[in-house]
Image (cartoon, rainbow, N blue to C red; front, side, top):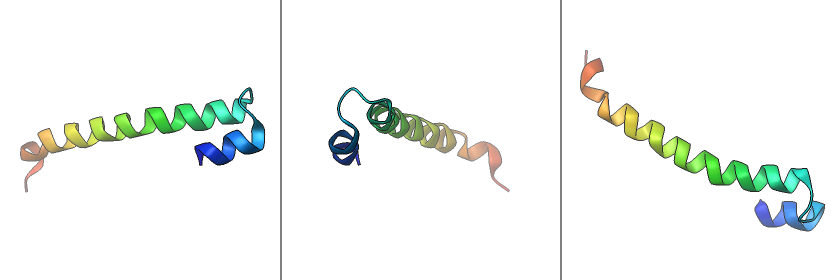
Length: 46
């Protein structure tokens, strides 16, 4: 998706910047949320 955004919109486009930053931010945030959920697993046992 990053390569397609760069080829379609160019390096100086806002759409390209959004695509690159979105990918670089989304994965670490998702992994952090999974780590938090796993650490709180014992608190929500039924």
